[in-house]
Image 1 (cartoon, rainbow, N blue to C red):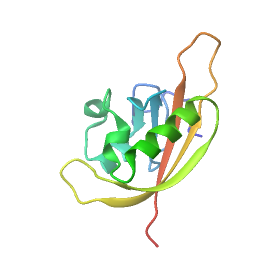
Image 2: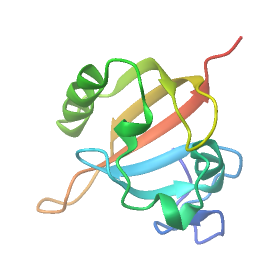
Image 3: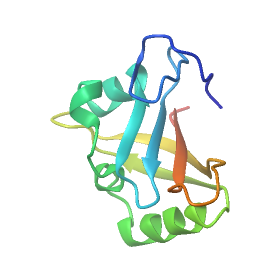
Image 4: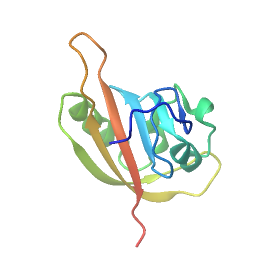
Length: 120
């Protein structure tokens, strides 16, 4: 889980973790914050990534991925291997781990995504 400091390296959200590919989305996968490393992986600027649908960057069995995202929004941690298609770049195989972020009652659910290379 990333720090909750005020350092640079993130678009909104105030999280740090240089070199770590983390993304925070709403309950259906729209990006609300991300690390610089994750923005680079998506081939977007951190600011340009905000509001985009993260599941649309994955090309393998998108309906299953969306179902898993909905399970994560309900409190279940998920993990999956999938193929990421960055903007205007070649695809890359990644492992994605998605978990529900704790929040106050009445606040919107947010999900924490960590993307790591699946290449060996």
